[in-house]
Length: 532
Image (cartoon, rainbow, N blue to C red; front, side):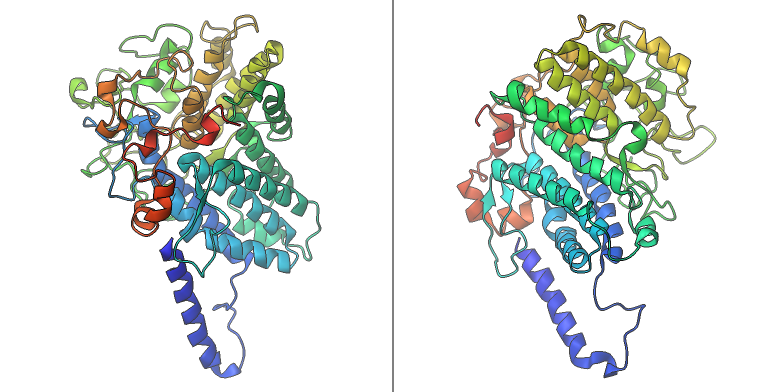
């Protein structure tokens, strides 16, 4: 956190030096603005969400078994971490350094100038960012987050952060009820990479944050009697179809603004040759789920599936037509190193990847979806024993993900047809009645719908059911010897705070929360415990 102080201090010095010159006090140059406006700040802040979450997700995807490494992974796939690196700390850095201070400026400038649409977006993004950070790390810096007079910072635990997130959501919604001082539709259309300034969709996004937050509290004693109703209420106030999903648009004009997971992107997060990453391979759970494993037995060495999402989400080996995957922690040695990247295989007539599913250059980057919210609603209703309504939300969730695949999947692949959807929906992989419906039906389908993009929400789902393979069908079941040595046989329930800012600069505060314990990553966060 010391870096925040240094960055802002440096900026202040630069502005002070510039003000001494006053540029001859003649006039101002519109191409060299002296004040950062909301219009200038919004796009970079939104793009940082995609770049930052993707950076952390390349590790989190291993922990939640979305992706695997080509070599046996002894860190993230074993629910461990890299103790002296910042890997897994990108969201922390975004919140407090790269975007957080700019987001504060955006909200302040927007409020002062009655740009209420910008202010509402700012509060929604602030709530979203703090929710991500506390769900990933547990206790985080809250009240002192942007105090530039401090070098060391105190943490606050999840109950306080959750409450503050709700306050920011309320502030966001209140802003959307107010009239902007001027018509900012043109600037919003260019600055807002998510909804182009559409207030109605942003309001629904804010409600989606609340729906997800309450859905994390399944372990609480009053979930069925209180929080479940809140999940249903806010889901119903949120997205009505996949067309309203929150996605960050990719410019795709260069490597710096294409989809951050795609071939050729500047971040190169799925580099197939870099020794340090060798990741982004298909992991066995998703392949099993897409080939008969949701309610039955997965097809061995599959070449096709009733589930039409299989060939849109994963590439088959062009040599033998078989879909292949890696068992978590085991690497690709037994498969002859033929398991594809999430990009697929290099087409025979080319020397570069086209990209697959959500991982092609022009793909929007999803951050919240109608489908995942419908599954959250189904889960809440199922726990309340309202199985009829739960079944309808479950069906909505599956259909919503079919829409999602068609909207955001690679243009190289054909759209899922209604016939394919109907065949799957009438198959044994889908619970046909509310009497058949099980919690595992809901949560396994939600895992599929979130695969490869919603790393944080999948992490929340797995932890609140303690990685139960009876709830998430075909999730890899860990033996104690599979796990990271310092985990003491326990699974991961949080990521450690960012190494350079916290372990190096803020270690005294970290120690107060047992954050220096080698197995701190196995301690359940407040949301994942029965404690009220």
